[in-house]
Image 1 (cartoon, helix red, strand yellow):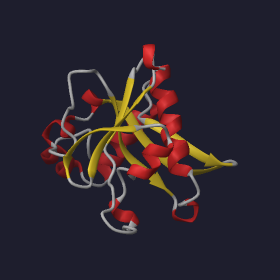
Image 2 (cartoon, helix red, strand yellow):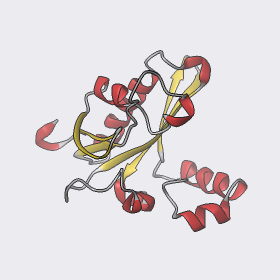
Image 3 (cartoon, rainbow, N blue to C red):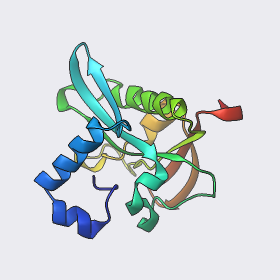
Length: 160
């Protein structure tokens, strides 16, 4: 819910309020993202929706719009600790692309981190890593801040 709400509302709902709001989204006809499973066990999550669903993006220097094209955005990835570094993020990003394309998206965009030197603690990679986005077929289209590329993948229309 971090990107779906402006900071004052997010803070006011912190904890149970935000959990209930996410549960309502999950139960709606417009799922808020995709899950990755290993067998029958859920091991990862990716938040993906039209950029307009994430009002906090409009206030971010790192995630500002690149142009006027209507895009869908990936704003959060989570992979259970024991399943990390096994390609789950790449699978989630590919699944997010299929999900968005199936709902009419033409472009999918993400805002990963790119470690400047070596590995970074997992806690700082919740928007994904540039390496995972590259492996899932995304290309860098802009960079407003060092270490924060804007990555895109054509998912529908002529670019598909």
